[in-house]
Amino acid sequence: MIKTISFRSLLGLGFAAVFSQAVIADEGLTQAEANTIVKEDVASAQVMAEVCPAVIGKNAKFDGNIKLLVQSYLADYSDKSMTYESIQSDSEYKAVLNEARETAKETTADEQKSVCDDVLNYQA
Image (cartoon, rainbow, N blue to C red; front, side):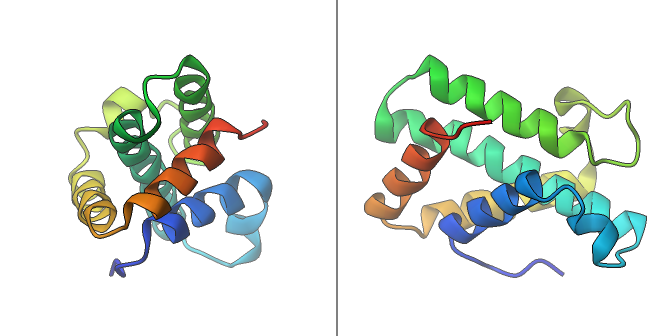
């Protein structure tokens, strides 16, 4: 179900969802498919939060931008009470998160830095 894609592509998909809130409705996705996309986006943000401090150093602006991204992704989840903390126990989310972590390991240092810089410079 989940394709292996580059870390940068994973981030790009997440940003696309933020910038186009109508993506889910326009694609004719089922609610389960839309929720999976949200889980993928949240997982990509979580992996960036794990990887980027080693790449760009600890940064409060980066941390704030990650929180903003996660909040915007969760706003599209069908269960509006879903939180970052509660999604951590979802079995599908755990699988998506592991896939995102493996994908991040396969990326180059330059690509990781570029993605981290994109998040650091993100303007909500």
